[in-house]
Length: 290
Image (cartoon, rainbow, N blue to C red; front, top):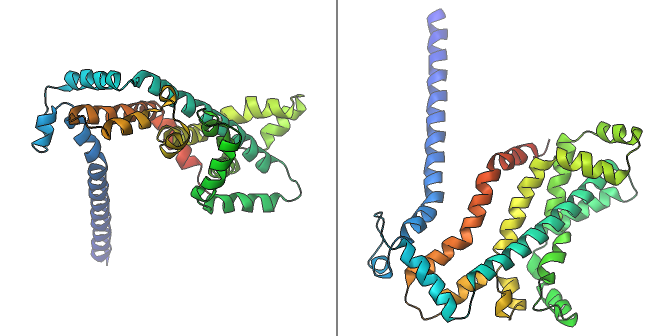
């Protein structure tokens, strides 16, 4: 009887080990598939246009700095400034994300802390707004921007970010799972105002969730292509995705410069994720449903 129990334990242990090995193999395979395009891009930007046209290989080239020089030269020829485009994209991304995060956190805080009439309907309405595709309001938004003469400004890309149902919903669930109302009662007993409690107690406490939503917001704003293409016609206001599009749609036969421009659009997001990765993973794991 004891031998049978030991045999059963051994079989269970072997099955658990086999399952873990299979899961590890699946994760490694998935990671390779996800990272291969980025690895291919890193290899490609080191090659000349002729080497790129000859076919892909894992061998590194020696034209990295030549591609940077050619990219800057092409920008000058077409009267584009990649540094100005980088600054424009940074201004839009930082301002829109900051507004979105602060007011979404404020809305989520109100939904979590206060009990008011229509609260259940408001929370369901937020979920309803998440389901609706944003493209449905594109025509109306375009007409509104044109009627207010806000084209060739950054306002259409910054202030509409103040209303983000998905960010409100995530931060509300994060508060519900991690933020106790006892902190609010303690702040009120000390005589702090509601805004002071929110700014000095709530926001630092949920910084992991804020970092997660901030990364998603910056990526979405940074990669926004249709908005700037629709409303920006002044070359001094072009964003980096616009510059890359105009460069790749021109007749310049230099693929090394093309891929270098694509790499420049990805680089800031990679740097941000590198420094915030631990905070972001903590926010994602802690912000789930109970």
